[in-house]
Length: 63
Length: 544
Image 1: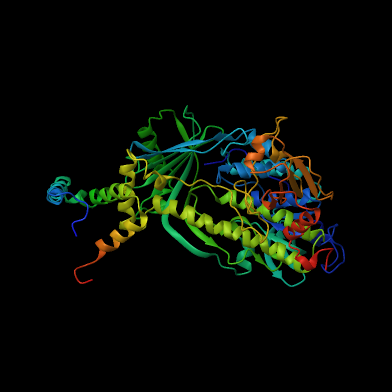
Image 2: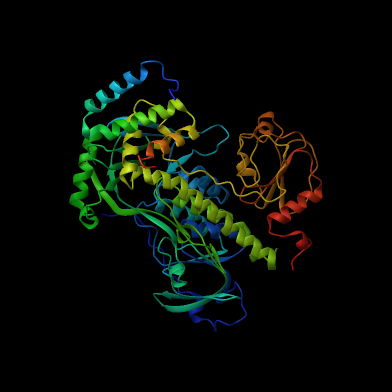
């Protein structure tokens, strides 16, 4: 399912994230990602949706 | 390191040392039998004694030491604590020295991330928090106790044995003049975190302790900084850890810094080490005045409590019953609320106003209500403690993210809130509420204080026993244990969501016992008072 991202947005996000992760460096990587999670969660604003997304992200290849 | 003057109180030879045997018939006179013996002459024990004395019940207070607390110890007293002290005549003594405050700032490194602003309005008599050394609070309470002939405060009386039975509690007490025994109907154990009574009865404090250790150092230093709570996360003066700072009277400042896991407690308590760390912090915050070290101590955060605060005829209060984390300043403040909840209930039982099942139910309600309050503290202060000392990588990462974002973003700031002490709302008794209310304090919650048209406060007018708040000209039942107050102004009606014939019944501790949107008949008011006293429907009309 493509969801609400407009055409081309997923490609742009891909590049933005790769660049940002490289830019902050490995030592800051986790902190950067956690801050981004908090900022995005504040935009989503729906606790149940956020809980579901956390569960989804925790799934491994075999789940 | 010394504390300011701590007067040594004289030891008086207890009359029981020269008395007939324990099984004599005398009660409350010069003899070894007493209705209430309180073990522990700290703030909680003294407050229980004053609450009892206010209601005509004598007590013996046994204090093992010869003087007041060493060191400043508990230094932040909440508005609720001040209201409790005020009803006992001790608030003036406290406010003569205490430093009131409303605000604080939390920093991440050197950047502000949270501004604490505690509400303070014209209907509040006291500030949300005041700072004063615990020994000063104790001196104020001791001065009140000295004026109370019903309170027998015994210094250098140390309990060494407790035998608790179905009819009485027997204590063995050591003094400089020898040992003696007392028998009591009820013993109140208010003897602190290392309670002797609790240890002798082999009652465990269940719960958990946090790993983090904190060193508190009182320094004497002149500074123009106002009375505000300051907290630093990861400052250069304590990298990766926290520092708290509070102002106290007499130019004393408390600096509270977190020790790292690999630091040795004994080594860090060495004065040279403390001086080095305090010097680094004062340099960081720009304080340049000379200073001296007054006192230091190390503490840990615990969430532990007794399974039952009432163990037969022994009732536990304060740190003897529960240990809570320091964050949110709930330790002494919850102990004071314990004393305020227990005092009127124990007085009613001790005076024989209720007995049998009702008496047992009323005292059990103290344990149930105050333990529920303790569990809420565990939850609130536990969150603060986890934030102060993250227990795992996941929590450490989340905290760092919250602190960094907190510099610029509001939505994470609740995570940084110190969650300061607030009064607890007890469970409401069945049938005590009225669904017609859309606001106002519910049964179980604390009354709402009001500034009165004559400039006084509602808190000053509450009855020693029950209080009926009315909002119009309605009649009220007349009984010696009921004070009737009328609040006819529009703002008070709004605060209580009251109509002209609404009514609120308040317990002796100011918590709402019942409320009615429209005029209750006298029988309903009498029944609500009976219920608040532990009497069930079959108990009405007298003792069993």
